[in-house]
Image 1: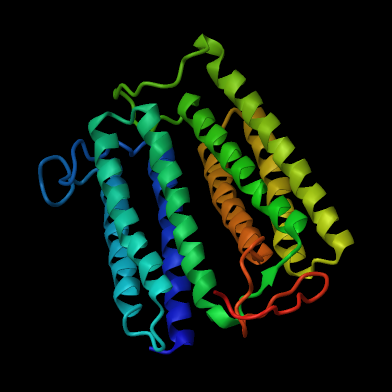
Image 2 (image 1 turned 90 degrees about the vertical axis):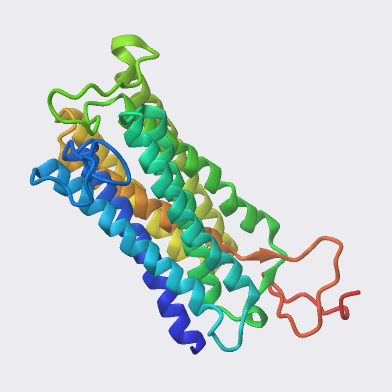
Length: 316
């Protein structure tokens, strides 16, 4: 397998892992989270009963199985790539393990009747798996000798520090979902919601989520301005895409709140959140790696910043 072919396989795995996030959100927003009362079987049988909720939930499980096969294939293909790269094999190994962990956590979530903490963890794990998928796609697109190191620590770290703020924004969004009306269960099923603030929990969590998201948006704009002034071309595009997605998120979030959280708009909101996370990971990857403070730079490895660093000799 050539590097180009493997890169395409890595991006296909990334796309499939993104799709499963969207189908999982659709399960909850169609009240089908408990369409199958147990796991791994559906209602004690291999095939689901002929009901809409059961078919939707079982369909998502089937899609997850296909995604698992894709990630296993990408892992195996890493050993057929020429030249072989150990780093790609290690990252690729994490993807099927992540999908397996998701399946187990999903089963526990069903057994726990969609308890809010498990639902939040289920979505958060999806975001962690996407980190590995983006890393694999990005690294498979660049040979080690072609990946530059940069001495612009302010520029690189300004992008990296957006990552925890973005993660906090998404986590707050999962809490808002866990306190909201879309529990994932259909009429007659009891699904507990977050109620630590009593009847005002949803309003309180939404306001906190909106505040964190606004701070995140301001930070993204600030970092984009910083990089534009410093002439850091490699990060301008992903930061611009990230800012546009955040603006769209703010608009959709405000409208869905005023309309009392219709399920279709909530699904769009979840989808935008997923793509916002991907854009953030893209920005972090584009920011690149830093030159070590003390280590010497190996001969032959390109190094750049606003000015090219001088190669001082081979690494010890």
